[in-house]
Image (cartoon, rainbow, N blue to C red; front, side, top):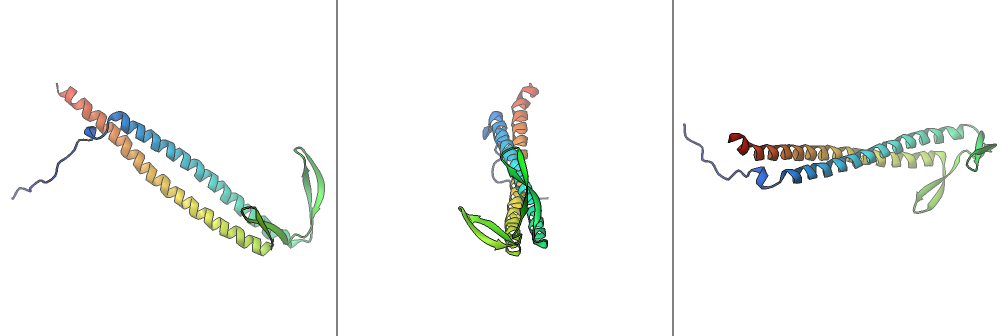
Amino acid sequence: MAEVEKTGTATPLNSLFTSEEAEKAARVVEDAIAESRKELHRVSDFIADNSALIHHVQKLPDELSHDIMVPFGGAAFFPGRLIHTNEFMVLLGEGYYAERSAKQTVEILQRRGKSLEAHLESLKRIIKDLDAEAIFFESTAAEVAVSILVPFLLI
């Protein structure tokens, strides 16, 4: 059997990174993962709130008016009544509002929900990539630490 010719060189990781640098990089990536998970949780809460809002907006036009408790200050409420339950002021962005019907408002909220879902999926992919990066740096730190200790163990 013919011997395979070897090309290239193998560079030991401890010549590229010190153990401290790899550990520091792993900590930075772990911090980024923690921040991304917070953002993921926040976006998930927005999605849940948006879904609840869609449900309420769809139900409001079913009746001509609704009895409610209106907040007055920080701790007081007084009885009130919602009228014109098919009219909504919708924030379009940059401080601009538009008056819309319940159906139009639901359509706007559903589009926003789709955008939030896309952002959520993007965050999940980012976290997956950061997890892989963290594993690489942790294994690199461990490998560098072992490669530093191996010469001493052979003595």
